[in-house]
Image 1 (cartoon, rainbow, N blue to C red):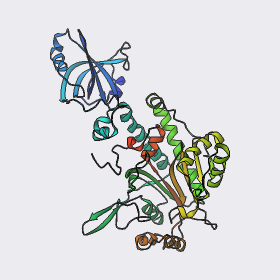
Image 2: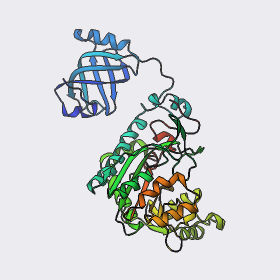
Image 3: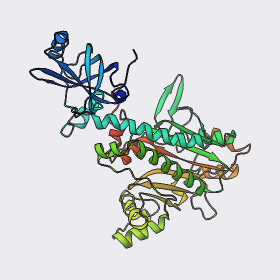
Image 4: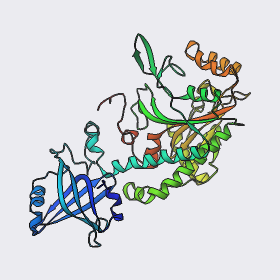
Length: 438
């Protein structure tokens, strides 16, 4: 007999099955015991009639069983409309205890007054909460559907090294580690290697993997380790090609998520999954600030207008809704000095790239990359970069097609999709300046 997931039991009415799970609840009445069993796919009621002699051993076992113990149950699946929980029940013939639980350190079903550090110290219990557990099914679907879109468009999935021999990009905000008899660094992003794939003629690549940032930031959107979703592709005409693919991919994924989990997301999180329309609205950075001032009275000093402030990002969501009836907005025409040396600039020095804002938060910086050897060497020199990026500059000496791409944090996407308060909660195990365990 093969193990059956609780979520699939409606396919097995009047059949004997074997199910495993946590004991979620026990109601011990005079003539009957009700045991609610839970696994990652759902819950089911197990009904034990006390009056039946054959059930005596099972009744005694349940009488002494702590909640959150795990059991294996063999029994018949019975369709029963009177049962509020999914209209079915299991009539067991055998119950086997597979583990016994001690008293829990907190009630994971009601986390409102539980300290966040206590929850994270016992993350394996915290994740038993229905919302927290389901969140990772949604996150899995988000990544799956973005991957699916890229597979359907002939992208190749690559896996780049996370140990680097030189500090990547600017050399700041990297974690230094001992690598045998020398120093190494944890990768801030797979950016250099994605571009190496372009020089190798791969054409279209993506990667889903860990990213490390040595930022001493204690905010709702930063983490020292997170999961990045990175895309790069060749033979583009401009960064607008990158924006178009980016928008199509997100729209495809959100449409699929709404179809699969939209009702459950609304039930658990009170969030309506909005499938965006194409194309996404686009505004120049200077025009964004002008409209924020005219519409909402938001003013900043001129020196701050070379990037979006945190408050401007939030107001950009309101602007996107009011002006375009949209949840997303591309912001373009950033000054190049604020961005990485490998981003292409036009003749006026304007960055050939964008930020994508969703629900008032930047989720991506994307761009056309500088692929011309002389130009990228000049840009690196301007930024004071030398030996650290020498290996990277080699990629462009022997021919490299025009290309561009972007990167997103999976945890931040999940936070915004479900309106969660912080990436701390949407990472399986959060890593920040003050959190390195468990």
